[in-house]
Structures are given as C-alpha cells and as structure tokens.
Image 1 (cartoon, rainbow, N blue to C red):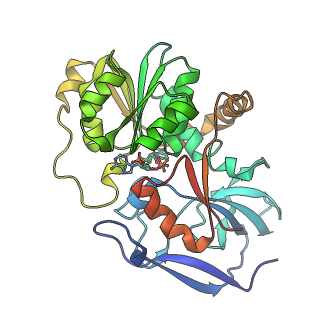
Image 2 (image 1 turned 90 degrees about the vertical axis):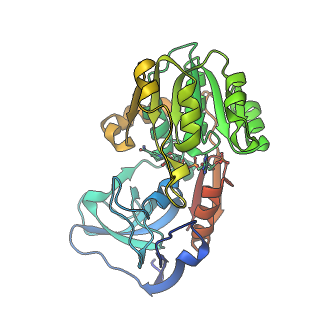
Length: 334
Ligand SMILES: NC(=O)c1ccc[n+]([C@@H]2O[C@H](COP(=O)([O-])OP(=O)(O)OC[C@H]3O[C@@H](n4cnc5c(N)ncnc54)[C@H](OP(=O)(O)O)[C@@H]3O)[C@@H](O)[C@H]2O)c1
C-alpha cells in the first residue's frame, strides 16, 4: 500500500535562460488522500516532453507552470484508491500527475488505459508521441506515395515515429537530427532514406542533396532556422505540419522570425497548419489499432529511453533539451 510520504519535484524558479538542475528541488510531504469524485494515483512512468520546458515560459494550450509548484507532467499511473465510480484499484490511467510519487486527481481528468505489455508503450507509440506523429502527419499533411517527407528532431520520440509512418505510406523520408551517430541510426535502424546532421553546418546544401526533388511535406518539430531552411526547399503545393518549436523553448526568444514568411507560402501555395494532438482524440482508438498493427507486423520500431528514479527527472528533461535522448524518454518512478 501507499508509502507514508510523497516525494515531489518542485520548479523552484522559472528559468530565464537555459534550464538547469538549480531550477528544481525535491521535497517530501505527507501522502495526499482522495475526496469524493477523486482518485489517489501511484505514478509509474513520467513522460518527458520538450513541451515541459515550453510550459515554464507561459500559458500555452495549458496553464503555465509557476515557480514554487510541483513540476507538471503527464504520466502512466495506477489507481491505489478510488472515490469515483468509474475507477477501481489497479486501473491504469494517463494523467497530468506532475513529477511526484503519488497524486490525487478528479476522475474526470483521467484517461483510462488498457493493460498493454510493456507498459512503457502506453507513453511511447500508443501515447502522446505516437498519436502526435500519426495525426500530425496523416491528418495535417496527407503524404502521398512517392512524395518527399522531411522531419526535424527526427531521432526524438515524435520524429522517429513520423519518419517510419511516412515510409509505411511509401514516401521518401529524410530526417534532420543532431550528430552523425543519430543520423546513421535513423538510416540503418529505422529505414529512413537519408538523414542530415544540422549541427554539422551547411544545412541548406546537405538537405538539398538528401532531398534533390524538393520537399512535399515538412513535419516541423523545431521551428527557427531549420523551419526557414525547409521552407525555402518546399515544392509547389507542399504541406507543413507545425507540431512544435523546440529551438525556441530553452533560452531567450529568437531575435527574428524565419525569412520567407509569408512570401514563400504565397508563391508556392503552401498549406501550413498547426495542431494539438488532443484535437484528434475522438479518433484515438482507431489510430492506436493501426499503430498496433504496424508494430506487430514489424513495420514500426519502438524506441524507448527509460531513466530510473523520480530524483533523476530534472536531469532527464535537461538532457532531452540538449538532445541526449533517442526515441521516447520517460522516467520509471515505481
Ligand atoms: N502538437 C502537439 O500536440 C505535440 C504533442 C507532443 C509533442 N509535440 C512537439 O513535438 C516536438 C518533439 O517533442 P518530444 O517531446 O517528442 O521531444 P523529442 O523529440 O524526444 O526530444 C527533443 C529533441 O529535439 C532536438 N532538439 C533540441 N533542441 C533543438 C534545436 N534547437 N534544434 C533542433 N533540434 C533540437 C534534440 O535532438 P537533436 O539531437 O536532434 O538535436 C532532442 O532530442 C516538440 O516540438 C514538442 O513540442 C507537439
């Protein structure tokens, strides 16, 4: 049953520049207890997401994380006590528990999860990462067989799945990632047609060589200079799926926006569309079934990067922002 205390990681200060360990503190508090309509959750795996850093900058699609509060974050958690009829002890849920061992949540904020093995797949391929890749590519950018698809942060949790789905759909796939080792891995292990190391310099030339027929679909995870480079190489009638802007999350805001906006969008008749994965949650079950079929058929490889221990969560996020993860990063709490 529940431990006597609950460990929590607080965001003690809102970072102005780069995120560091000094922005967090671990504390122990009394165990929370559930009231009517609530459940007590034991956190099993915390999802580490680039967006965790963006939440510290201000309100986005959710409230900002304020200094002094438990750091926010999604997790797979297990019901240990329920005072809500829809949930029983032992149920698995996805919830914004924050970075702690235990959390109390109103039942209406929980998403019940199936019991899938390994449980970690509920955060990676069948969780936000897989669904973001699936809907952001297929619903927003509608890639067609033979087209060239470019994805940035390609070795990350969303990007690695985007590239593989684009391959399943018969596209030529080019990834953009930091470092030769990640680029080699994308081609050798995940079946990308080519990968470009944006840290090696000359991104424009390298991308031109990797996508000689131009770009039909760009799945943008990073914004900034990489967005600008891809925009300049888009084909007529191309589609850009705007998923996120990691390059602007950790540090001061960039001085200028990308060149070519809106000029190139007009001349090339581009469709540039943003989305939040929850926009498509009505279709969630269908998407998970298709992802499961691809995984079972060996067409979609699941790459997970699991770090042990709640106390290591700050380091896991700081490292993710610096690019030391491959695939879906998460922290095993219990
Ligand atoms: N729209 C939605 O509903 C939705 C949902 C989930 C996630 N997202 C977005 O999806 C994107 C991926 O997030 P994630 O949580 O899955 O993270 P992730 O891709 O697993 O990890 C982030 C990766 O970004 C790369 N990166 C960091 N700084 C960069 C920079 N300045 N320029 C280029 N690449 C950089 C790093 O890899 P390198 O080694 O390659 O630099 C790092 O590994 C984020 O933009 C996130 O906000 C959107």
